Image (cartoon, rainbow over all chains, first blue to last red; front, side, top):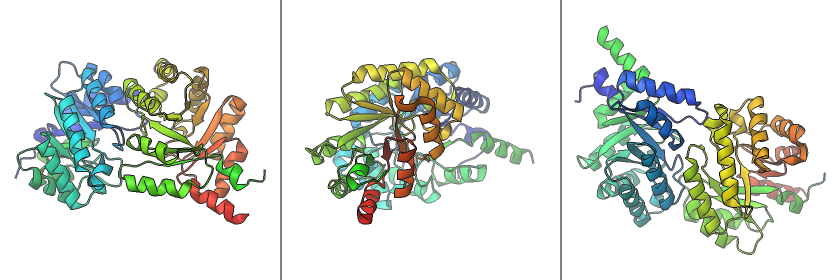
Length: 226
Length: 222
């Protein structure tokens, strides 16, 4: 079972600020919290990438840009453009929403072309594909993971947090069983406390997308003190 | 005003947008609404050419949702989407503005965004921007609407994904800006009588995924 101390959980957290009404000050707070707690990244909309990259300069924390967010209903070319634009603005990692409709229509050629285009556009950077598992059947989740591995994508990620549901333990376990060591799993959406975060890690998640990172780490620190 | 099926349908903008909406679902939805003389129909970017083909010769405008729905894309990405819409012959665009810029009162950023979109479109197609009134205070609603109108854009769609269009928002904006603004009421409008109420308060258009159902209901009343 993985060790889930406060510091190693913190290093797995993509500290997320994707609220539609986030003010610039909220982005500053998010970056300062990431530095203070040693999170892996701050996950933001592309429009905030340059601002956050400047705030995080000189730290090991990277900016994680949300691409095709949140419906994934954009062309392959546009998602690739958006990813490259985010990297040019200072993003270190890219999380893109796959074309879920194409997967559900069994248009695997389209899904593969999209994954390969994003892989090519982000060469040398960590790339995560968001499956939006709440909309998928188990066979569709398995297929998406297989295609992601084939496209050499670094992470398969459960959810945007904007659809009908977030990460579940069963989904993380299933995704991990498919990708095995060929890719990592990011659990995201609805992870609100330390216990839930620990369960996700135990199920196979290597990264956690959450806006509750501060609360999670403080709960773990409190538990360690008591 | 006595609404006929034809006069009411002319105010209706509808569409089918969503993460798991497949081509067959788009085809079925368009087949259902096609008999009625609606104003416009919106689909996700990959389905825009299909929608254009299915509505060919109908006079229905095809709408491209830009930066939808969260508005968090960079201006460069939104302009890339608008270029796609222009290249494929679409008739109007619904750009989501940078809502963070609105909440942060960043007038320079918003003016830059509005002017760049207007310059790129160069009056070839209509621009109806989404300020998401449902996340704004009344003061913010008036402030952003004034900025939009100052840019020369006159079309405003009240809300995108997740918002509820309030009758008092239509009254507020129409009282403040009168006929300078063309308002598309959008967000949570499901009932025919609610839609008619919003039109009578001054909305020029109703955007609703229930648009077809409302037309059918009005048709059945006559």
